[in-house]
Length: 371
Image 1 (tube, helix red, strand yellow):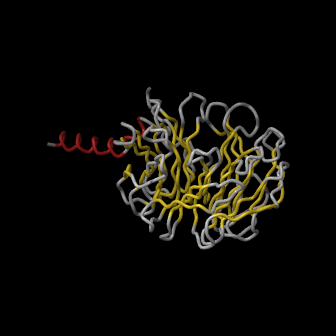
Image 2 (spheres, one colour):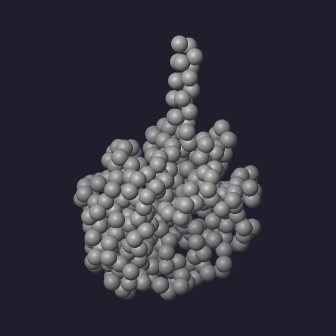
Image 3 (tube, one colour):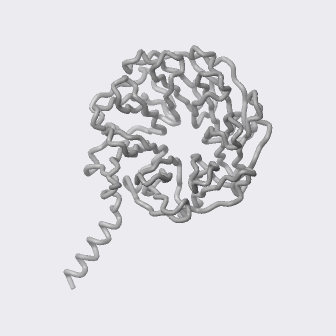
């Protein structure tokens, strides 16, 4: 009897921590630092030009903290770091791109009710604080970088919860004085993705809205005319993040949503831009805060990773063109994960996972799924 009880307990423990076989964290040692910040966003790229992926952590959310730069050792460990700036800010978002056209990666930081800031790279990962962009005191929740006006430089999209969203147009030298609104003035937009949804060779906007507001696609009619809108979802979803991918491999882009206290859903695209066909890839009612996509199992299709607040984060492996999914829990249950990204940290050709955790250490997990 004692043997049977012990065996059952071991099986339960193994089931609860089955993520270790697929995503390695070496008993929790793979952390960006041992400091428990209020991290809300992770940005990544080759900041110092040495061929591996480095990380920027945006810290603070509603309370000023220093943002941090973490340099990759080349093996997927981060043994050198320094503050992005001496200033502490209420940072909610960070993204990297070559904003001034000099060939290295610069940083844009979105702050909650504080000026959003630019940081320019000297090519070696040393940053100079630039000017602010967008309205100076807005409830910014996310940034997206893309060449929206197709003039060859990178523009910045700002999503604001309960305030007008903004497109900040690049003058080609990293200046963003010209802004245009998108969405409605009452949107509680938490995330926006940019993709050519209608196949007309320009970039459309896919908005994730909270506070029971309608999720929408704004089609680019040319010259940044976003007057045509297509709705998706129930109309009252609490959507915190969206991702875009052709999940069912039919040639049309689909929309993946991360929702709060309701199932996470894929809305399948079609040639007539009707997103009524959908499936719940995650039927739980978790507090899902972020979603990213990558081919985690190297089988040629797109899988999904979801960040949850106070629950396990999870990878969902696409088993049959979006009709069935295998779930792998990762991370530690109870963490408040605000952002999650997929990036090849150790250069083995497989996407790893980095968590942005608020009031906890930030974890990363090496992909151990065998091809």
